[in-house]
Image (cartoon, rainbow, N blue to C red; front, side, top):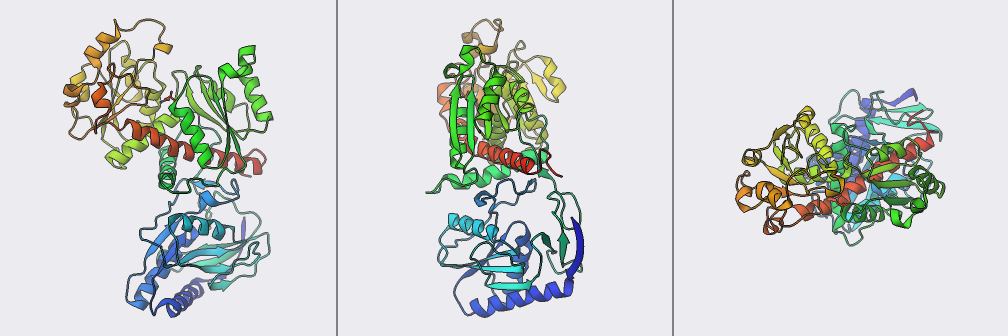
Length: 511
Ligand code: CP
C-alpha cells in the first residue's frame, strides 16, 4: 500500500483522545461502574491511554482489559494471524457494569460485532458503549459509536491507519493510504510476523514463535471449555475430514471435538470403511475427499511421510495426526502446553526425561523438537536397543542408567512399547522391561519433588507405569488428553485461516 497523506498529526490526535476522555468522564464520572476494554490490536494502546486519562480525571482507577474478537469474526482468511497474538484478558467482573469497547478505527462494524459477542462470552454487562478514535464511515451494520475522536472521509478502497504510542509521542498520527494494505506490514512498513502455514506436518519446521502462538491460542480456547455455550463460530461452514488409517482414541476424538467446538462439520473415516481396502491409493482417496469439497484433512497413517506427501499435493490443509514413527506434532504441542501449565511458561533449563521405546516413537521425536525449541534439557532413557546413542545428534542426553535419567527431572514422559512398529524383539520380555524400566513408586521418588508424570496414552498399566502411579496426583495424563482439544483447536484455526488467506491471494500467501 502507498501511504498518501498524513491526515492528523500528534497534537490533533492527542487532543481527540483528550476530548473522548472528557466526554466519557462527563457521562460516567458521577457514579456507576464502567470499564474500558481495548480491542486487539489497534484499540489496546488507545484503551490504556483513555483508562489512564479517566483515572486522572476521576481520581480513581478505571478497570482496563484487552479483548481479541478473532474467534467470533465471520471473515476467516481476511487477514493473517500475527505470531504475537494478544489474548483476551479481562481481569475484572463485567457483570452489571458499563463496558466501553475501544478501537482505533471503525469501518464496516464487523470487528465491533465480533467484539460484542466476545464480551458476552465473559459476562453480562448492563450496557456496552463504543469509543472509536476514527470513524471512517462505510458502515455495513447498524452500529454507531458513542464517542468519536475524528471523523475521517475515506473512499472504500482507501485505508485509515493509526499509529499510537503507549503515551503521547510525536509519532502519534492518523494516515490515509490507497490500495490494499500488506497484511504483513504495520503502518511504518515494518514486517509483522504471521502464521502462514496451511499444513502442520511436523514440529521440526516450526519456529519457537509459532509454538508460542499455538499455545497462546490454545490458552484462549481453554477458557471457552467451561462455558455453557462451548461453540465458537470460527470454522462455521467448513468441513473437516478425519482420515484415520491407524487406530486411535485420543487424537481422533480430540480432533473431532476441536473441529465441532469451532463449528465445523466433521466426517471421520477409517481405513476398513474406506475404498482403500478395494485398492484405492492414499493419494486418490485424499484427492476425492478434496473433490467432495472438504476444507481440511486430518491424517493418521502408518507410513512416515504420508502427511507431507498429501500436503504437497492438495490445496486443502493437511494436519498430521501421527505418521509412522516420524512425527505426531499435535501430541508434542499438547504435551509442551501441559508442561508450561504445570512448570511455568519458561521451560528453559527444565529437565524432561522421556522414558521407553524412543526408537519407534513419533511422540518422542516430535517432543524432542518441541522441548529443544522451548529451551528444555531433554534426557532419553530406556534399554539401549530402544534408545540408541544416535539421538544425541538431536541435542539430547541419552542415559541408560534409570536412576541417573530420573534424578532431578522436572517431568518424566513415559512411552509404551510400540509392538506394532517393532520388527524384531528388542528386549527379552515385557516382564523384564517392567523390572528394568517400568516406573514405580520407588523410581518416581528419584524425580525432583513435585515432578509430574506424563504419558501420551494409551497406557499399559503394570508395564511402563505402575497402575497406582498412573492414577496418582503426580500424574497429569488425563489433563494432557483435555489439553489435546484446545491445542488442536488452535492448529485447525491457524491452518484454516492461512489456507483461506492463500486462496484469496490466488495461491500465494501474499501478493
Ligand atoms: N496419544 C495418542 O496418539 O493416542 P491415540 O493413538 O489414542 O490417538
